[in-house]
Length: 363
Image (cartoon, rainbow, N blue to C red; front, top):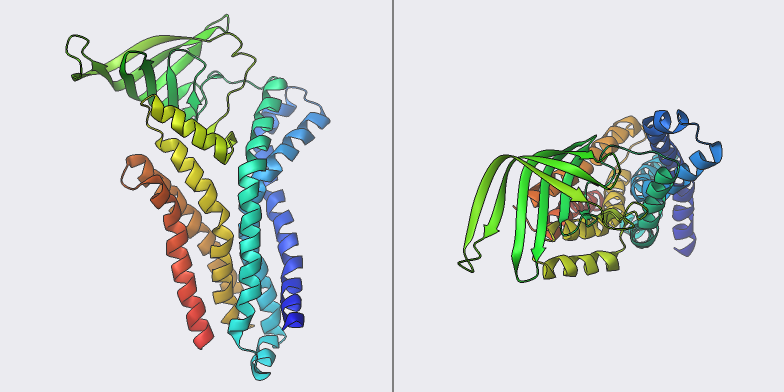
């Protein structure tokens, strides 16, 4: 069995490495097209462009490594089936179940590697990528308003914006902590931001929102003010033009936990932080989910079904990542807790895949 385990893992290693490189290359090309006009048109040197590409690679690996495991398993088991090696193993008395342990062990080790990647490498590379973009002069109108992070560059406000497109904001949350009272909250469905000419701040206009105010004459009494349009000036604190704040995706797990405690102490909902933390951890174990489905497809694969199997592979990728996107939206709506919504796709697909593996073994 030691020789057999080594042989199985060796047959998966080459397709896995080739697939990781191929998928990463495809994703890099797609992103090059997105920012080529912004970068190349400004006369950026080839060295600076290469640095941008290098900073993108760790983030790509967090997606391509789990996907490559499934494709590699289909390719390896397809060769086993085409050469009738699975039939030979069964005829030699080797149960299909004995093929599972080395592959699942390898999947768990890869998941641990992706988890470390998502915790240590991806946040640093993403932040370095943004710093490089800022250093070579790529700017946007809402330069200081970043989607998906708590923005603290405009004291005394703490802002969180779910979406930014040009100078248009969507689903805006602004919190104003009070030293001797509850936090003041401003919520708006959308808004715009226009920087001041001297770059010392920006004017923000919010639309269709509410303001939660506490009555100073009656402590503990809350009243809500609705507005159609609300304007406010945001002034940068000293040094913020040189400082680049971290997005949630650019924080390590420890930093996310620290940020969560800080937001909770100020009375600010920390749901986006918890959502980002569990999303990264759950995504790291997508490798185990895909390996389980790879076993189910591989153990039941016939040499004339390889094209059909690749269609199933594509469908599985779409199902997993679309389910993850849907679960994220459910958590934002507050219908499920962040940890439950982020782990739900893993649990559902892993249960389905394990059932298919059991059926293939019994057959």
